[in-house]
Length: 214
Image (tube, rainbow, N blue to C red; front, side):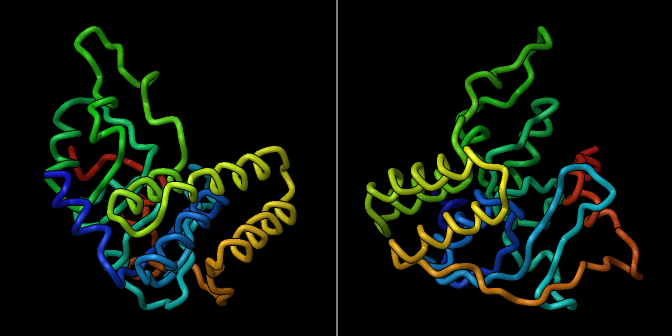
């Protein structure tokens, strides 16, 4: 099952919207380099009112993208993430049945709540989306294992600083040293949703709500 889902998601020439942080940007850069994915936008989803989906093309349909580093409940939207937490087993089953979402914790059954109201979350995948994508690309035979060390080095150097300029500088150094293109510097506009409002899909993306499974 997971082999088929990985094959469908990690296909050539997909379009993607990635989380607006260093991990998401690095993950998007790997996908652009090794699968020829096309950058479609960025997403902030910290639960704040200012959160937004930023698109290169204002008329772009969210269902045509794979969200990277962003857990999305909507069954019609594809995503690769490592953050998803399930409130119950039915939620997990629906997530899997969608067939267009991939998460190492779901794959390993480490996000289900147990009958005693405990969870296996302490055993969750402890690395970032970039690591998971790199590991998958390695298994697909597209890159070699040394990329994981390089990813570790750049993310560790970024985690030691809160400066966006330093973060951007470290990502640029990584890109240049490994011949991996940066995400394009494109002018983006906020996604307007249906009728200029934040519709249910929009809210689901930004807030990681589970209304589509209720």
